[in-house]
Amino acid sequence: MESMGTLKRSNYCNDLNQTHIGQEVTLMGWVLRRRDHGGVIFIDLRDRYGLTQVVFNPELNAEVHAKAHGLRSEWVIAVRGRVSGRPDGMVNSKLATGEIEILVDELRILNRSKTPPFPLDEDVEVSENLRLKYRYIDLRRPQMAEALVKRHQACQAIRTFLNDLNFLEIETPVLTRSTPEGARDYLVPSRVNAGRFYALPQSPQLFKQLLMVAGMDRYYQIVKCFRDEDLRADRQPEFTQIDMEMSFITEEEIIEVAEGMINRLFQATLNLEVAPPFPRITYREAMDRFGTDRPDTRFGLELTSLTEVVKDCSFKVFKTVVEKGGMVKSINAKGCADFSRKDLDDLTSYVANFGAKGLAWVKMKENGEWQSPIAKFFTEEERKAMAATLGAETGDLLFFVADTPAVVHAALAELRLELARRLGFMPAGSFNFIWVTDFPLVEYDQEAKRFTAVHHPFTAPREEDLELLESDPGKALSRAYDLVLNGTEIGGGSIRIHQMELQEKIFLALGITPEEAREKFDFLLQALELGAPPHGGLAFGLDRLMMILCGRESIRDVIAFPKTQKAGCPMTDAPASVARKQLTELSLRPDWKED
Image 1 (cartoon, rainbow, N blue to C red):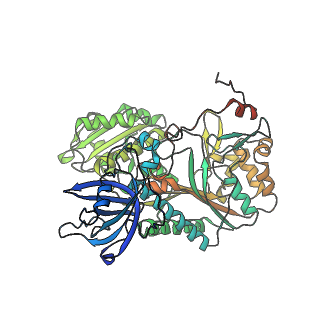
Image 2: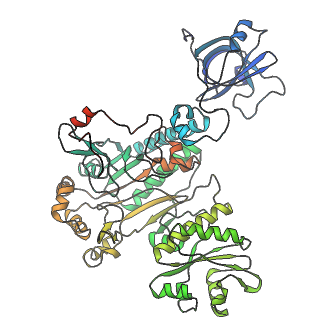
């Protein structure tokens, strides 16, 4: 092995072009691939910035050429040589440095490498566990490095944008106390306070509100948050949030700042204008039209209610559901009457995963004729009324679900997405934003037999709904707002409660006694009594946002060192057992086992 010595890198591996021909340069990086063409050895040299072809010719330097025979994939080398134009017919137009090559005069082998656990020079299928075990190898692949570069660009754009608007970047504690915020906390035992625990923050919610009480006026932070919850493609036990809070502010002003920041982020990473203002839709309209509060608006396939149309029909399934207070809704898949019976059976099985007991369907034939197992249960007038409500035409395929509103919306929302995937209605590189507003303030938890906050207990209700807090809190709407991108909630926030009297009313509506409130939130409640200004804010999930922006299917592909779906790290083997002494120092039982 050799050292760099006085050799100094002069250029990166994507810098050079025809303007550099004749110059002496020094490049350093990894051997991506090696090719021996009749005695001349070609190496594709890679660093973070790109590739450069370097050439070892025995006629130019026999000693260096002989040394190059030993080079293998992922060896770390330094080369010094002259830039030369590639011969006619050998230009690689797909490569930034494809017009030139380096004729090597000096080669230094800085480090050797074992055979990598998977190839880096091809877009090959590699198991995720293997990629995560050797994540430092995985990150050498251009598509992975590109995601981290874009993430860096996004963070820099965010900071610049918010700094220019007089925001202060302020850090908040990572070791704090456990508060009820929806998901399980990660707990950290205290050695110096035996039997007591810190919690890792699920968000900086309470601290950013306290910063507004402190007069900081405009705060932001790109911050790590922690939730001990079941994982999926867009969840991690630790995730990154773009967090912000503002004083003396309205919903309109917050939304304007958020839209400007998102536009700046897309300009910085994709050189793309996303053209604020973004469309808005109420929560109720989103549920009625799409069955979900995070609608993908890149395509139609909207839900249509048929409850009133079929309430008196003779089809027992529909009629019984309506009589019991349920609903019947439909999706018109335009031009899809050619779906096979297998397609229909597969879709029926698919919606069963979301609670649907069945999926009725109708293929629209010529002259309004129905092809369907349920056609015989409807009169001609009923069929015409349903077709008119759905705008059904020859060649259309109609789907129906009848059940409780929750089941109907869940099943048809997912059916809508599955149809869009099958029909190619989700084009890569399209970005549809939509704000969802006017969420319910609370929802009833049947298991707990009480109301719970839809967002969090510090969300302000609409002023016109204040009188409902005591009489009918389930009907009160909040001053909350979510931003949805391509069917994924990327962020949201609300105007907060800043008056103690109103906060107490909300706690009572949620079944939280004054004693319980003081026990869990005493420091915040004291702050509300000491001149808290009107304030509000929002937070964006940086990981989810980058996943969509980079066209990936999982947030693990845009995080440097993510966890698996079982919250583990194959590379470091975390979480891991610890020494008995460490447990006893923390006043924990070393022999503890779940009963």
